Image (tube, rainbow, N blue to C red; front, side, top):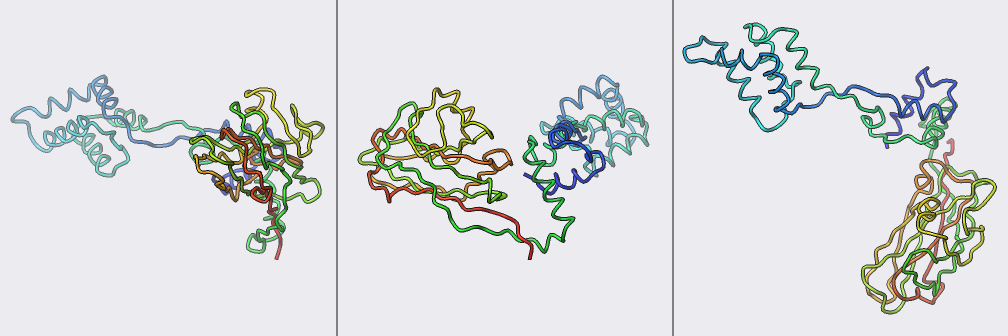
Amino acid sequence: MNEQALIDELKKPEYQGLSDQDAADAINAKTVVMRSPVDSGRLMDACMAAGIWAAFEAANQPGSSDPPASLARTMMERLKQPRPLNLDNPAVQQNLAECIQHGLITQEQQQQLDTMANAVVRWVDADGIGECGIGFIINARKAIAWACIMPPSNINTNYSSQETITAAVASLASDTNLLAGLESSIINNTTTAYDDRLLSGKITTGTSPTASRQIEVWAVAWDGANWPDVFDGTSSAETITSSDIKNAICKPIAILSTNNTSDRTYWFTGVSLKAAFGGTMPEKCVLFIVHNTGVALNATAGNHAFYATGVYPQAQ
């Protein structure tokens, strides 16, 4: 995501006074005109419809004078090429200007062809931002506020000490439906208020697992009043009600592809919890671990571990 582009956009007066949600809606709705090469077949159709192609053919008859004849021939060859034509190419622009000079096309016709290179796209797509959620707006406005307090050069990214997340997945049974798994202890951000947490961990398969299966690690957030579905904020076995509910409430942290090697340890590292929730850190969340390797996970507790490291800005 192009965070700086979003920050620069939010500094504009039209976003002042808008709520975070209204600002996100306005940014997602904003469109810009982008220039792109035009399909040569479309250009040829337009030239035929406007009589331009007929003018080129007439100028290219045997015995016709130059430069109109050679110029018309060049333009016809360009339009016959299978690849799109870049109307902003200096050589093409020079050819079109000479066509106007020699009466092969009019200024108005040239402008009509030129507009075919215009494409209206969403600003978020043009600038590489993608769909802008409210979390991105909140974080961008935080960055703007920090920049107003002190120069960016005086702000460093700091990391907390690593925190262990309790999740007793040793001997966790396999589930073909990937619904019966284990809930971790709470990752609580209410007091620390970290800007992000980086998640990492390791999970070890059992003896003779089935090849081409997977171990999944998900994050599930507290909504401020309740835990969703079967979750309760304690490290315990849970079976999610259905796959559609799982897809609705769980955010992917790591999907680990496994093979049939016994007692193999699979790692995931540096996964942004904030990114998993669309740019907004949840107040509280838990991990949900589930697998379909065909056998129970390794029975030794020390062969499994889950960690969280807080990320926060700090002034020098």
